[in-house]
Amino acid sequence: MQSALLVSLQTSPPGATPACLDATVANTQCPPSVDKLHPGCCMAGDMKQHSIGGWVLAFAAMLGTGAASAEEPRLNVYNWSDYIAPATIPNFTAETGIKVTYDVYDGNEVLEAKLLSGRSGYDIVVPSASPFMARQIQAGVYRVLDRSKLSNWPNLDPRILELVAPSDLGNAHGVPYLWSFTGIGYNETQLHAALGEAAPGDSLALIFDPAIAARLAPCGISLLDTPQEVFPAALAYLGLDPKSRDLGDLDKALAVLEKVRPYIRKFHSSQYINDLANGDLCVALGYSGDVVQARDRAREAGNEVRIGFRVPKERVQMAVDMLGVPADAPHPENALRFIDYLLRPAVIADITDAVAYPNPNLPATALVKPTIRDDPAVYPPEDVRRRFYIDLPATPDYERARTRAWTRLKSGR
Ligand code: N2P
Image 1 (cartoon, rainbow, N blue to C red):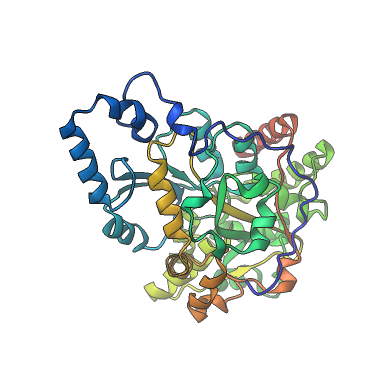
Image 2: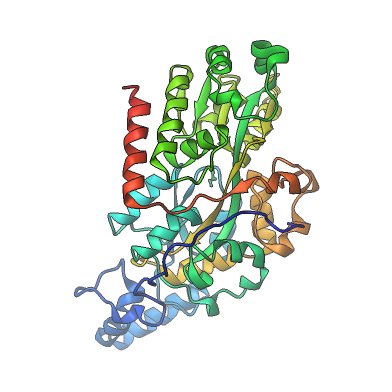
């Protein structure tokens, strides 16, 4: 990142109440029974019961993982789909002996439901800083990170740390992983065939103007399956504040969306990558790197499909996705090792190369492939960054109203 990110964060969530756990108090929070899922937590009490042979075995296990940790060599990661390089996990396992169970989701809401129901079993999750991680921190979902275990922390861009600090006071619970912005992926040939010269430039009108949407409907329009992206985009199209919490504005956004609802083929937050690449969709509201991946998959397939990415001239939602360790993570020490590994410039640069999302690691920028680093759809220029906004936590009343509107929109009633 050569230049400052220009994003307006107008309000901050109320002061964070840190989750009760940090690395030093974790061992005092043992569940009553010794449980393999809580080796770090139970270590102190458990050790007292061991025979000399047990001590020897435990020591051997520590040597085996090469770490001063008594955790079993396992790690459970829950990340966004299409958000890691093919070699990231195998290399980590080869180096540490830690076996990784890796699951994916394609929406913050899915992750949040798992986290709030408790005992997700995950050691690492990747929520967007705002509004999701911010409110999850308030709910006590995360451990405070032990910075002394993160030797590569100084690689992080201080501007990104500052950007997420209103969501995570003191950057205590989360480590910025990658960041994204939301725009329009489109099939160049189909768009031209459907609209010709009538195609609007870089405008959300491509999706929200009913006359245009009607002409694009036969080749397919898809929207991200989240009210947290779609309503702000509709507000931006109307020239309203995309972060507005005014219920009258919400009604206006819903009215716009209801007019184009008949032309929306799909609400989905990951399928559009393959659909665009295969020529099965002509326009998608999607995340920057996902659209670039669709473009590259189409190129690799050599199937004549040409995918472009437009950044709306109105406003552009930006998100910083964060590595967090749930308070009840079974392997918190391994989680810190994994985070520190991801903070290595070569590791995160390889991820950016693979998924086309920018990372917040300053020394990594020089290692990113020039074709990715110089691609404005991956690292946007300054005039685009000026149009960025970050969504903020809303009141429960507003969230309820927006969820009601969303349900009504999707069900078409
Ligand atoms: C990965 C999408 C991540 C971007 N498929 C969401 N902020």
